[in-house]
Structures are given as C-alpha cells and as structure tokens.
Image (cartoon, rainbow, N blue to C red; front, side, top):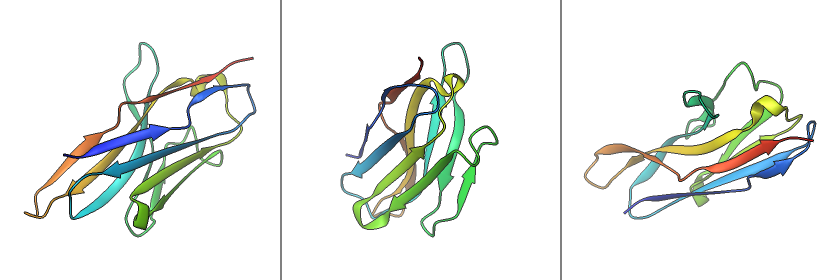
Length: 120
C-alpha cells in the first residue's frame, strides 16, 4: 500500500513563505515524476509544479520565480518552497506521484491535501 503524506501548510500573511513536504511510503520499486497541485474553492485542480527523477522541473506561469520544487530521491520526498505568497495562492495543495511497482506497473497516487491560506 502506498501513502503520500503532506505537511507544512498553514496560515501566512501576504509576502510570506511556507515550505510544503510530501513523503511517499510503501512497497514499490521507485517514485517517478512528483508534483504539487492546488485547488481553490469553486475552481478546478491545477498543476503548480512538477519534477522528474533527474530534477527537471515545470512550473505554472502564476508561480514562476516565487515557488521552487525540489526532491530527495533517497527519502522519496518532494518539497515546495513558496515565497512571496499572495492571497490568490490560497488553496488546498495536493501532492501527486507516479509510482512504479515491482511488477513494473505504474500508477498515480495523491496525498490527502494540506490547506494553505494567505491572508492578513
């Protein structure tokens, strides 16, 4: 059984910073692409950033130059450093990972979500 567990959300003032973490645990061969998505009330879930095993990254235009995604492959962990936060960044942030199992099958998994609220 695979679990993705997020941490690091909370309430922060505009202009502040937060760091999200997500750890993948369970019995699997490897973790492939890892990413962060977010969903604000009344809006669709959207990709924030993603990172491959080799460190190639992709960002939504709205977070470029403010957010940084990174990962520690030895710890099966992905991070999202969020700086210069804006009220429009308020959302539930979800971790996503492509997991490859020992039978070589690959499936996507989601974390439970962590709330980020940017407000004064």
